Amino acid sequence: GAVVSQHPSRVICKSGTSVKIECRSLDFQATTMFWYRQFPKQSLMLMATSNEGSKATYEQGVEKDKFLINHASLTLSTLTVTSAHPEDSSFYICSALGPGQDNSPLHFGNGTRLTVT
Amino acid sequence: AQKVTQAQTEISVVEKEDVTLDCVYETRDTTYYLFWYKQPPSGELVFLIRRNSFDEQNEISGRYSWNFQKSTSSFNFTITASQVVDSAVYFCALSERSYNTDKLIFGTGTRLQVFP
Image (cartoon, rainbow over all chains, first blue to last red; front, top):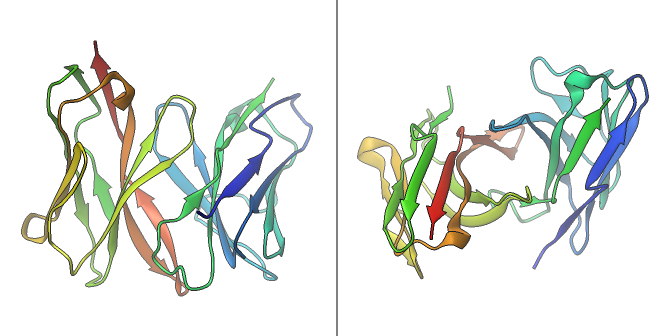
């Protein structure tokens, strides 16, 4: 079945540095990718929606300059956390939707656990 | 506004007990989808079921069953004869159509612990 791969699975970085997280669709073309954030013991909150070749749409309260999203190809979207701070420590997980998959189960990556020290 | 409520934050059962996880949703849409996902300690989201708003038939898949009732806006999930491997956080979610694509609105999750 369709698979979404996310890399890295874990990352620890120092405060002030930037971290890039990749989300790849392995056997389908992902026209839309979603980025979610999950704080410990909390639910998943949508951060942004990206469509291939266009700017991402950010949810209210999400800083677009801090969380840079690039969806340059139909199989890859990246989330860059710029100038990370400890409060950005969270579990980031992406999901992908391909053409003809409207309302189909969104395929999720395995997530990236970010720890900012 | 779209909203998903999972009132049970944590449930503990002993192996072989049946357990029901509740999910209540709110939406103005007439066409929508409901989902259940399992999130084991490793963190990945495992898709369990999708149900569209026009299909109120209950579904059974092995030890899992789902009861969809539009009249009460509920989509409850029952695990029969629970096993330790069922221990996880379970999320109910509602699709929200936006800009011709769909994003998921998640409930707060129910942490299920199954003890041997």
